[in-house]
Structure formats: structure tokens, C-alpha cells
Length: 385
Image (cartoon, rainbow, N blue to C red; front, side):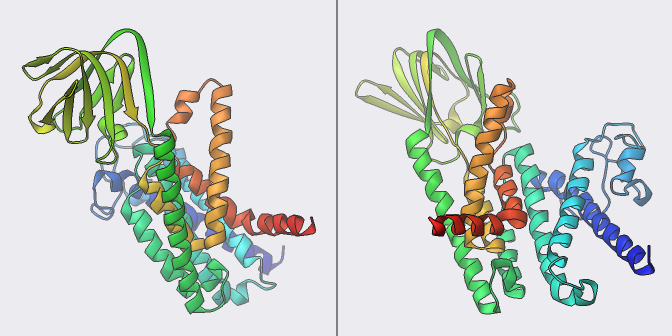
């Protein structure tokens, strides 16, 4: 190998390890952000079990997890393998982005001032996708600091590097970025609302009476709804104030009150009890006991939340309107494929727990590396016909 080849190899390894280092920081974001913990206080990472602040020499990306065998050096507590996978995934994607963008230049290193800003912006975008994906998997939420904050960063990035949205001037870069963000926001929001109208409820019918009740085992945690073999967290059922659960009751108890055959409508903040034409309403703040005997329960159902809509807005701001359409289609196909695989392998319940955000992120990554050639190929085939 020539001296230049050795230097080039070392620089490429450095790119990968920069990604792994950013992945280490993303692990901090993924753990702390949903819990409301500052990402920079304490500055050092700490063990989730004993809260021991990990020194720098025990926090080397990839290597530390392997050498310590996934355990805390202080208490021996288990450190999730996800930490290793996030670092590895970030390193690989950073390296792939670097190869793709710098590879478009005949002499990449002398021209780093031309492709460098483009690579940096895409690295920021990929980092947001990774953080959002794993937070969504763990907590079924997409924080505004990632979605809305990411959209703002995307618009600024499109102004700095108009090539992100396939434009040549700063002004057109900003305009296309804003328009694409609006398309992502409006397009997926419409899909969510139409889906809510068409498929927004799920009915459970029981052959014999089942007990239905709302309990709150921990006063610091939201209530849970239990009936038959089913158990739902409050946040999984009530996303909008218009969401409601309808329970056909053979008997109902609300605090000290008892009702016969009635229909109970449970909303986010209230309970309505219908007995024929009579309607009685209770504020849930004053309800301590709520149980019933039922043969039918209808629950609100949400295919995706508004966080997914904002996530696609962020994707559009960074990548342009074509990427928005491609991402929706790719995410839908990926979700269907994984759903079929989970059913065939007998893991349909596990697959149902994966939110839509990760599929959007996978669709966006596919666009980064394969999207434009696929679109060009499809258009050429369509025009030929």
C-alpha cells in the first residue's frame, strides 16, 4: 500500500469511529430524553442500575461494552446490548453516508470543502432518525425536540446545502424544504385522520360476562384499563380528547353508586353513563372505584400518532418532497412485510408493538441510498410505456 492509501484507510476508519462516538451520545439521548433528564447533566454517562458515573476509559464506543461483557464495572449490573447496536449502527450509517457523498467527487479529499457540509448535514439527519427510532420503540413517543427541532434544523441545513433537497440556490433550498415539510405534515396527518374515521375502533365481544375495571396500582403512574385477558395503559387508549371507550354494562359501580343495565362511555377526563334516554356525567378526578360486568367493549384504536406526522415533517425538511412520498410508500411496504413475517413466525403480538416511527426512519434511510435511482428507474419505465 502507498502512503496515500494508508492515510485514506485510516481516515475512513476515523469516519466510522466518529459515527460510533456519536452513537454513544445518542444512547444518552435515547435513555434520558423521555425521562426528562438533562442530556448534559451529569456530563458523563452513568449505569442505569447503580447510577455510577462511567469514567472515560470505560466508555470507549463499541470496545468498552465488549471488554466489560455488557456489564457495569462498578456493580456488575447488565448493560443492554442495545447500547452496542446503536453505536455500531451509527458508525455504519455515518461511513455509508461518507462513501456515497464523497464518492461522487473524483478527488474527494482535496474537495472536502465542497462535500463536507453535505456529509455533516446528512449525519445530523441520520442521528435524529436513530434517536427517534429507539425512543419510539421504548416509549411509543417521538419527542418534539427531535421532530419539530429536527424540522427547524432541516430547513437551516437546506439553506446551507441546497443539494439536500436537490436544489442549487440557498433560497430555493429553503422554499423546497419548507414545502416538503408541509407536505409531510399535511399528507400523513390526512392519512391518520382518515384512518381514524375508517378503522378507529375495535370491538371485543364476550360469550359470557367479563369484569371490566379501571385501576391505578401506582398513584404516580397513569391508570390502566383491564377486562377479560386484556390490559391497556391509559395513554394507549386516550390520545385525543375525542377518544372514548364504550362499555355495554350488565352492572356498573361508580364509587358508591350502583347501576343496572347501562352503557358507560369512558373519555380522557370524564365518564358518561347512559340509561335509555337518561345521561349522567362524572368527572374522573372524583372517581376512585370504577368497575362493571360486561359482554362488549369498544375501544379507540390509533394506527399511528401525531408524533409520526411530525417525524415525517422533519424527514421532508431534510430530504425534499419526493423523499416524503417515497418514505410513506416504503414505510407502508416495510410495515406490511414485517407484519407478515411476524404472523408466519408466530410473533404477531410482538410485531404489533412496533410503532410506525421506525418504519418511517427505515424508509428515509432507503431514500438516502437508493431512493433517487429507484424513482428515476420507475419514471423511465413509465415514460417508455
